[in-house]
Image (cartoon, rainbow, N blue to C red; front, side, top):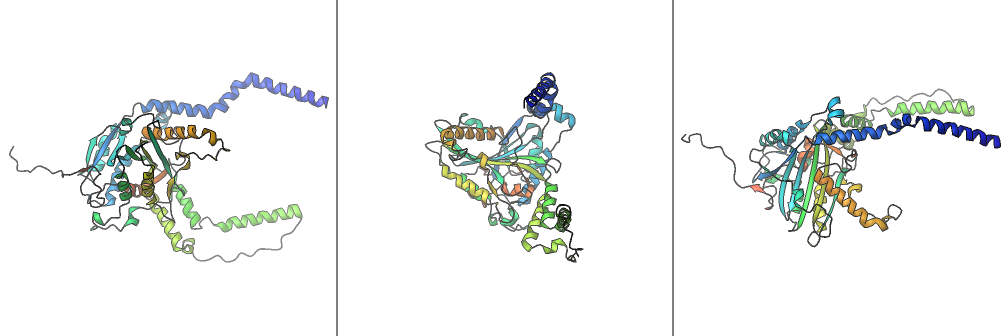
Amino acid sequence: MEEFLTTLSATLLVVWTIIKTWWWVLLPIFAWKRFIFMWRRWREEAYSKTVGYAMFEIKMPGEVDRPFKAMEQVFAGWWMLFDPADWWEYWWEGKYQVKISIEIVSDGGEIHFYLRFPKALRNLIEASIYSQYPEVELIDAEDYTKKIPQDIPNESWDLWGCDYELMKPDIYPIKTYERFFEETNISKEYQRIDPMGALLEGLSQTKPGEQIWVQFILKPVTNVENNYKDRAKAEVAKLAFRGDPKANMKDSTLIKKAIDVVAFGKMPDGPVVDKPESILPPEMKLTPGEREIVAQIEHKISKTMFETVSRFIILGEKDKWNKANLKNILGYYANFNTENTNNLKPWSPSITKIHKHESFFTNLFLHDRKLYLKKRKLISQYSSRFNYNFPKDNKENFVLNLEELASMFHFVGRSAIPSPNVQRIESKKAEPPTNLPS
C-alpha cells in the first residue's frame, strides 16, 4: 500500500509539473471557442456603428383592391436585402446580414404600422411597396419605443409579453391565405376572411394609458445559412418511406445473427427468403392526409424564405392597463394554426411569468426578482430588435416563406377591416392633368 501511495504521489507530481510549466500551451485549446465568440462580437459591434436604421410609418389607403400575391411581391423585393459576407468581411469587418422589422402598434386604441430598415436601403424598401401599392403613404417616423419610460417595469408601468415558436419543425407550413378563402381575379376585398381582422379589432379596444406592440423581425436566408431545403427533403423522404426502412431491418437482422453465433454458439436457422416487394411506389402508399402534408412541405420550400422572430408586448400604466387584452393577440396567432401541419405558440423561456414550483422551489424566494429581469430582457430585446437570446443564436427562430408572411402581415382596406382606429389615407393620389398651362 505504501509503495502504491509513493508511486501515485510521484505520478501526480510529474503531472502537476507538466501543467505548471506548459499551462499556456493548453489555455488556447480550452479558450479557443470563447475567444472566437468574443472576437466575432467585437467586430460585429464595430460594424453595427456603420449601419444606420430609419423608420417609416405606413399609412394605408381607404380601400385595397390588390390580391395577397401583391404582398408576396413586396416581401420578395425586401428579400433583396440579402448580402452575405465573404471571409474577410465576416472575420475582420464584422459584417452580418441586416434585417428589417415590421411592427404593429396600438397606443390607446390608435393603430399604427411601422417598418424599420437600414437607411442605405431606403430606395429598395420604397420601390418594393410603391410598385404594388402606389396609394400607400410612407412617412418618416421616430422610434416609438423611446417615447415611454425606459425603466419599465417600474412603480407606475408594467408589461406582459413573449416570443413565438413553431410546435413542429419549421419546414412544416402554417395556415396561409389560400386556406382562408379561395382568391380569384374577381374576388373583392369584402369577401376576404382576413386573418388580421382579429388582431386589429383587439388593438382597437385598448384604452388611453395602454399600448400593445407586435413585432416581426425578418432576415433573408438561403439554404446555405439555414438548411431548410435539406431538412425538408429528409422529412418528405421519411414521410414517403423513401428511406427504405427494410434495408435497416435487414442490417439489424444480420447483426443479431452474428451476435447469436459468437456469443451463444447459436447457428442461424437457414436462409431467409425475402418477400416480394410491392410494385407500388412509396408515394402511392400514403394516405390522402399524408400526401397533402408532403405537398405543403414541398410547396413551402419552393418559395423564398426569411428567418423570423415574432413577439408581442402589452404594456401600460398599472392602474389602466388590461392584461386580458392578450387574449386578442393570442387569437391572432391562433388563426394560422392547423392540426396536420404546424402551430404557432408562445415560447416558454420568453413568457413573462415565473412558476414558483420550478427550480426546486427556489422561485418562491426569488420570484419577484426573476420576473423583473425577465420583463426587462423582453422589452430591451424588442426595442433593440434583437433575438431573445442575443448575442447567442436563438434556436427558436423559424423560417417563413413569402406566402406565410403575406398572410400574417399585409395592407388592408376599410372593406375588409372597418375599424375606424386604423390610420388611413382618406384621399387618393392622382397625377396632375396633362393639359395644364405651363
